[in-house]
Length: 304
Image 1 (cartoon, rainbow, N blue to C red):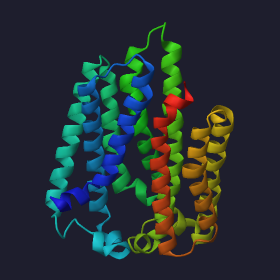
Image 2 (image 1 turned 135 degrees about the vertical axis):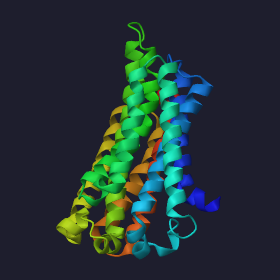
Image 3 (image 1 turned 60 degrees about the vertical axis):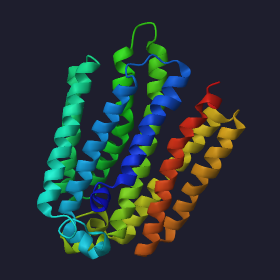
């Protein structure tokens, strides 16, 4: 069981579930927004998302065995504690459950075409692991877009089916808030994926993958990541100065737990060279993502 939990990356799955719950119960519910999903509905959506994400993690590990044997041999699970056949069976089972739950939920909210989202997510996760991950930058963008979609999908199923002419403005306001968070998740994850490519360059090179640092060289790739790391700093400061400047607690939260770590990351990226340094930056980026998402709890203060 422990090996299966590691294979599906249970900590990442908890993060996804937490963010989706925050959107539902920290953003939508407290402000009386017209919603579609009840407790069971949001549970089904979360379970469907987690099944597809877990399946994506499994297929990623299956295709990454060769690179992981070089980059992190102590973390290799497929072929060691879990056979490749068992991993594939889990991958197919989780995909079937995830897509099946998505089909059910789409009909419950009366928007059957929404079902195609789950099919697209499932297909993209497989294509990413088997092919796109080997391409410079494209794979990073695709997986980051899927991370952003895990936030937007809550709005798609909870807000959009409940839109009427009378509540359209309020619904779209909260949809835009979620979209802002999704864009934040996209850029932070994009930077982190590129940092991981720098960290894993030796194994990726041996496996003949063509990630960005392999395609254009370490130094050029590092400069691009450094420039990208400035974008969320500027974006969050813009957000603070335009929307939060009257809320001292919210301003302090964002400056201390989001902006300061982002500046630290940029400084570290400017001179990063070793695998250990990139691993450290990756961990800080994960924390920034967590604190960024937890800021949804501040919205009773921000929108009061």
